[in-house]
Image (cartoon, rainbow, N blue to C red; front, side, top):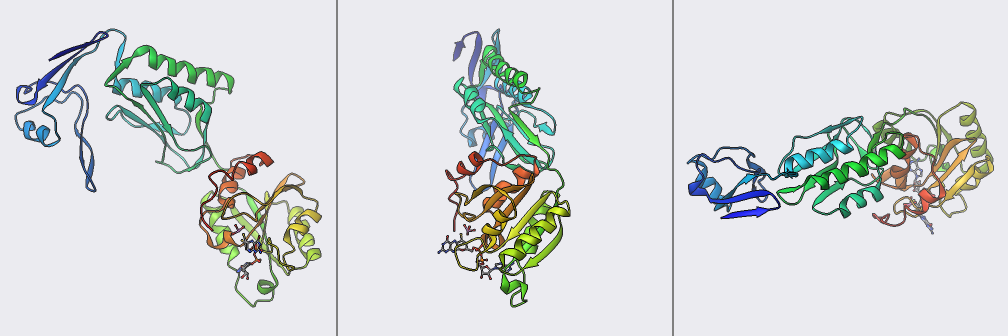
Length: 341
Ligand SMILES: Nc1nc2c(c(=O)[nH]1)N[C@H]1C(S)=C(S)[C@@H](COP(=O)(O)OP(=O)(O)OC[C@H]3O[C@@H](n4cnc5c(N)ncnc54)[C@H](O)[C@@H]3O)O[C@H]1N2
Ligand code: MOO
């Protein structure tokens, strides 16, 4: 059966009659829980032994395709779109089943313009799927995939994507709407409050947790100091860490509502411009974010010690990527911020 679609000619051929013919696209096999991937590559020439394999994946017919003028094969279109978005620190996969993945070549923070991604997807027939803005990515992690929905598309559709990407770059100093920012190595000063830790009644568990979270992004806790639940001592210790010139000051414990929870008042008294005391995310709601003479200072509540992902894990990578945290950044964390606790 022949199908003529705006120039491109698709001929449906029974697999038994397709020996010696070239496949027009990748063919996928799925065995749930075992395998999902390409069984035959685009361009493969069908042999007699392929026939049972094709029937096993439910293909009784294959397409033979002659592309029309001004039309693009799904793989070529997906590749062109991926090339329109790629940039420093990003590598492209080969086209695969009409899809190309953009992968991070480094550890960093994904910078994704959600509004532009929506504009691209409004064009229809093509898809751009990305990770969320401010996702931490490691080498090899995907940040986006381009995909073409039909087997071929009008070249003008892809040109439309390229135009939107190019216009974005023009307005943003050449930066793609999908990019990765590296982390700066911060030298961190840590102050652990709590009479029970200061007196040695219990062993400190905050230090190891904060050290390992910082190390994940290439930063280091250079010095850890301890203070009892006394406001004046906490203020004095914060000033000591500031004078020592650390890039970030973290204060742990005493962030809640008990009479011995002195940390938020002490951070304010030290002269901090408090962006927010309280963060609309669970876990991590009692976190305080501020700046002391331009140095980021955070009051970390108890959950940071034991929970693998809290509001601290949202804010830390952003600060290390060079962002200044605003009140708006904090208030928008509530929507989608209920993760547990
Ligand atoms: N009535 C309310 N209760 C609680 C609230 C609230 O808003 N109203 N908030 C809850 C949240 S959220 C958290 S988180 C916790 C604890 O917050 P804090 O940051 O004030 O934690 P602490 O009171 O200092 O300690 C709690 C717990 O953790 C142990 N701890 C503290 N520091 C260390 C350390 N360095 N090493 C080991 N263990 C440590 C401490 O001994 C306590 O057992 O409050 C909720 N409650
Ligand atoms: O602030 Mo708590 O730190 O949400 O568990």
